[in-house]
Length: 472
Ligand code: TNX
Image (spheres, rainbow, N blue to C red):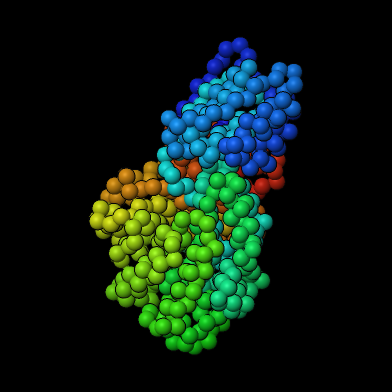
C-alpha cells in the first residue's frame, strides 16, 4: 500500500521488515500538534520531540532534524524507523513541507518504516481566489491558505478588484471601498479587506510558507473603480454597481492625468503594504481597446508598476509590451493567439506561470450538469486536472521559461465557503501534483485521494465525489 501523501513525493521507499508499520498512538494529538505548529526551522527539533514523546510513550522515538545544503531548494528527506525519525531539509520551506508530509502520514495511524526524498519541480505553485465577484473575508481566505499550504502550494494570488467590486482599502483613495465594495454578483452585501486585515492575512500566510500576491486588474475589469472615481473613466459619467457576469466591457481612460494619478496612487499603496516581491496588475480582457491602444497603455502601466519597488505579474495579454526584468506572465487562455509567446520568452527577461483554463481553472464545471461553475473552457473532472504537463500545454514556450503552475478560482457562481471547497476539492491536490512535479500515477493518486476525502469529510469540508474515485 503506497503512502497516502499528496502531492506524491518524488521518491518513497517503504521497508516491509520487522517493526513496519510503526504504530503511532494518540495520533489525533500528534496531528493537532503538527498542524497548529507554524514551523520555522529553528523550532523544529524542540516541537517535534515533544510531540513524539507525548504520542508514543511506550516506544519513544527520537526525532532528529538537520539542515542539509546538498538538497535542492525546498527539498527534504524524511527517514522513519522504529528508533528514530530524521528530517533533513535545505531551508525553512523544505522543513515545513516535510512536516506537511509527516502530518499526512501520521493521520493514518500507521506510519510505515520509510525513506522519503522530495522536492518541488516548480518554485511557483499558486492558488488564485477571486474575492471581487463575491467577497470572501479573512476567515474564508485563511481556510484557503490552510488548504493551499497543506498541499505544498506557496502562493495565494488574491484577485482584489473587478467590475463587480473593489476589495482592498487604499488609504489615498477612500471612495473605492466606501462606494465600490458593497455588492457582489447578483446582489449581496460585498465587503472589503482593511489594511489591518491585509497585514494579518500576510502574517497568517507567512507562517505557512505562502506568499500573498495581490492583483489590481487594469485597465479593464475596472467598472467598480469608476463608480468611486468617475473622472478616471473614458466618459466621466457616473456609474451604477454592476451585478452581472459579463467581462471585457470596462477600461480606464487611456491618457488622462486623473486616470494615471489614480493608477499611481493604487500601485504605490499596494506596493507599500505587500511583503512579497511580486504584485499582479492584470491586463486581461480589455476588449474595448484597439490592439495599439492596449499596447501603449500596458507599456506605460509596466513602467508605473515597476516604480514602487515590486516585480510584476500580468496575464498573458501583456506580452505585447516591453516588460520590466523578471516579469511573470500568467498563461490562461489557449484560445487567444499564443504563437508569439515563444518569441517573447526568448527576447525578454520574463517567465511564465501555467494556468491553462482547460486544466487549471477551478471554476470550470466537473460535469455538464454540475450546479456550480462555468463551462467556457472545458469540463474538468479529476483526471483532466491531474494528467497534464505545463510544458506541453504552453506550446512553443521553452521549458526553462516556465516557473510554475497556478490554480485559479473565479467566483461568479460562488456564494459560500462550501461552494469554494466543492470546486477546489478534489482538484487542488491534482493541480498541486502537477505543480510539485509528482511522478505520474493516476491509480496511486486516486487511492491516496480517497483517503484525503475521508479526512475532508471528517473536517466537515464539502467536496465533489467524482465518479472516477472510489471514495470510502
Ligand atoms: C476569464 S481568466 C477571466 C475572468 C473570468 C473567468 C471565468 C481571466 C484572466 N479573465 O475575468 O472570471 O474567465 O472563468
